[in-house]
Amino acid sequence: MKRFIPTLLLVLAVGAGSRVIAQHATAFDIEDGGRAFESTCAGCHGPDGNLIAGIDFRRGVFRRPLTDAEIVAIILRGIPNTPMPATPGMNEEQATQIVAYLRSLPETFTEPSTVGDAARGQAIFAGEGQCLDCHSVAGEGSRLGPDLSRIGLDRRAAEIELSLLDPDAEIQPTNRFVTVTPRRAEPVTGRLLNHDTFTVQLMLADERLQLFEKSELRDLAFVASPMPSYRGSLDAQALADVLSYLVSLRGDSLP
Ligand code: HEC
Ligand code: HEC
Image 1 (tube, helix red, strand yellow):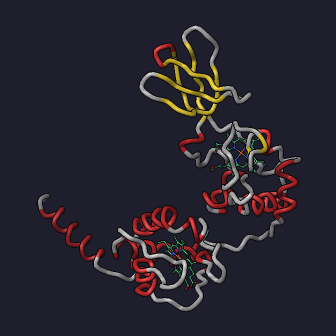
Image 2 (image 1 turned 45 degrees about the vertical axis):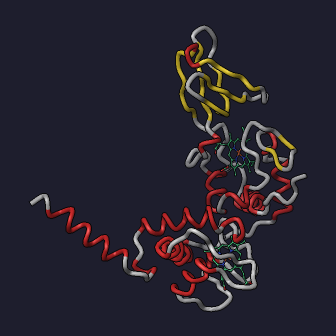
Image 3 (image 1 turned 90 degrees about the horizontal axis):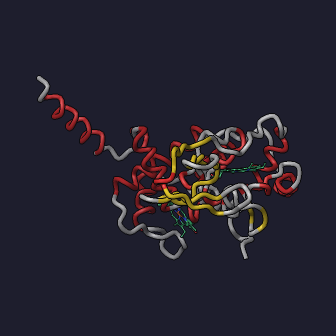
């Protein structure tokens, strides 16, 4: 009896794969499509898909009505005589997953209830928010936390907002903090810059780099983000302002 199950699953999988209509996409298609969008399309369209005038994938806004098949064709072949390129090496299934992702966006997008002001956000960032104590933008600030000069290109607005409210919810692998306990010294906490078979390299709070031999360590543990949650300490308007400032950071102001 067991033998038949894989065959049945195979038949179902093939059946699902041959449907080209995004409405029938699975959660996995949407997730794969989202990843492909981030790596292939977000550089121009923005992580939220709203950086090209007249096109806003979050809200399902296109310059003209496009069927799923037309979007697949645009992804594969580009739009001639415009900057929208063909995507070499992408097949129809991957393009279909991206379409499924694009079509899914308006279902989850909610218009922000508070409209932010990026200039006020910049002032809060440098002032009462004390963000520069840990972050840098365009070369100014601290290197302890991640550089935010192009955060608006690298992350979706919703992800940035989550970082402000719940810093531990999602931490990029390059932003992790560890505490190492040497055999013969006090524990040290810092940002994990690098590690290989033999060594661990940390950046400490005062931006000093320190290298540890793994063989000299008693313990090494990941610790919570040192970033405080701003839920409550910044009000809804200030949070919206900071968020619009961060979303506007696309690296243009880099030297
Ligand atoms: C090099 C920058 C660039 C990249 C990369 C890029 N696009 Fe575009 N895309 C554009 C531009 C610019 C336009 C507007 C073209 C025009 O003038 O009509 C566009 C148009 C489109 C349109 C037509 C929208 C409409 O309303 O007519 C779709 C759909 C689209 N892009 C999807 C994608 C997807 C999906 C990806 C990733 C697989 C992608 N694009 C990658 C720049 C880019
Ligand atoms: C005490 C140090 C500290 C302060 C103060 C701080 N942060 Fe952070 N922040 C970090 C660290 C460390 C990380 C990386 C770990 C994580 O994601 O929580 C981080 C992560 C982030 C991220 C996510 C970055 C990414 O690549 O995904 C954003 C956005 C951010 N901070 C914005 C801010 C803003 C805005 C403020 C001020 C209102 C602020 N931070 C204040 C230390 C700090």
